[in-house]
Image (cartoon, rainbow, N blue to C red; front, side, top):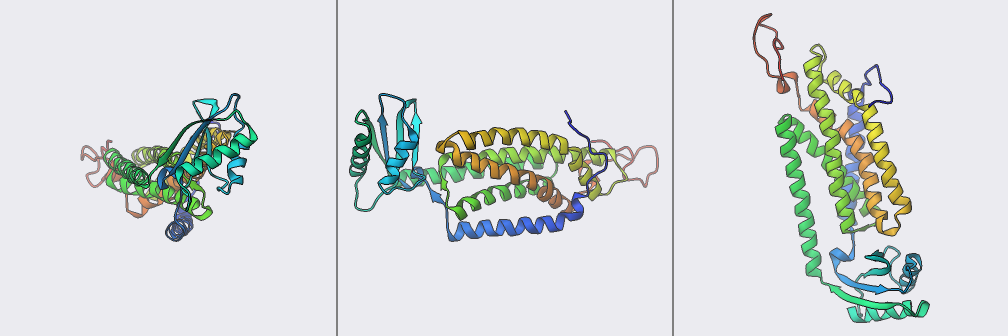
Length: 317
């Protein structure tokens, strides 16, 4: 389905160098902030205390969060419903000079002072060892996704597309992490899930564009590589706008109406969608062009009838 059709190809590759310099600077800044500031890891990674309480009526999460913040904890301390609207889970970072039991007692006392009907259901200490295991498993999951995407693109298209695709997708991941490092937003398991989702989402856009490049090489024999890539990107513009606009509408709904629990998850997705479009169009396409992809890489040629000097004679995919 197309809402509009662009009749004249947009010369994206003409501006590839400038756009990729901007991309490289953004990437370098993201790496710099990751190294100098690091990520503000959540309790799931660093260890801490998990307190579960229940109310006789649906809990006011905003009020609960305000009470916890009033005890000196950060504004982004995780306070969320679990199971029902009456059950609340609070994740507290470790505090020097306080045991897990003392933390939970302090929070429970503050909650009871506001609403006496609150009941403590469970207190659990998440140790640093568990946090290290989550970090290890999270990085392992990321590595497996990266290898899988590279293999898929390399087998479906050609090795140059595999390299271009994975560099473009890692570009998105590093920039997302750079934003979280710069602003010190909390990096939780939900955010990690969003990063992995962005990888899959971004590779889908790359596959669509790479498919169009292969089709254009077969169809337009007189076009050079930059023209083929420009045509491939232009021909997918309508689909790109429809797909990403509808996806972003859902993500923004989570961002504005999903509450603090989904706030950083939706924020990571938003950054990933924006840079996913950018990288698929400008980074991936430009890298393929600079690596010297040509028609012969994607189209098998058979010398049949016609000019024996024509390398495209009898070309088939």
